Image (cartoon, rainbow, N blue to C red; front, side, top):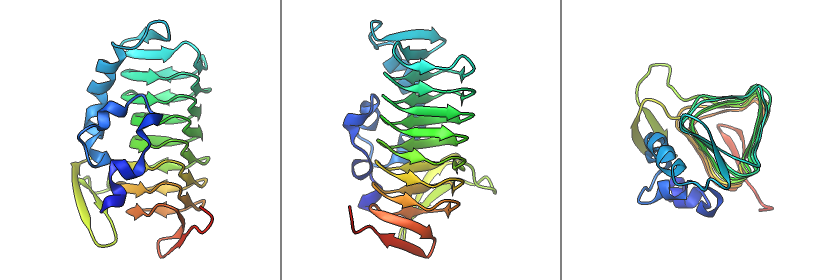
Length: 223
């Protein structure tokens, strides 16, 4: 299924973490590598641009970080990013240029590409959010199945076993997720797609689509 491959989901020019994708076909292959990648990359970052704020925490000097935000490493906050009041970053996170992590939003083991917005009461765990993707207020990723078995990615006619107990959602570039939606474990949303508010999403949503319900996914005509 070509549409769930990294090359179909992301513009690698829009992340400081582009090297982590080299040689990997699918996004879930990236998730176990985030921790070590951050530490390796962080030690190479320019001290003119980034400041080491704590144990394996690198924050761009022009990023805005609220004094009430909680930052745990390994973590890289790229240039012009904004970390707002009471954001909780649990570690293993890369926050891209111009990205917004908002009030009471929680992040864990994630890559946010440049200009991603998770601005209001979001939980994003074991996930990758592509360039300019946006999660509406209260929308979350669910990263563990209720029966605690490994997560699989289910397309229309194919099923991929990730081997991971924890995998949230993968959002391609320019994805819009409506308020109070739940993205279930193993969800992959293709580029330029929209998710209706209060949706419960599972499996693969094609690119350039409008997700209304599980049985009603419309193709965008004005791409």
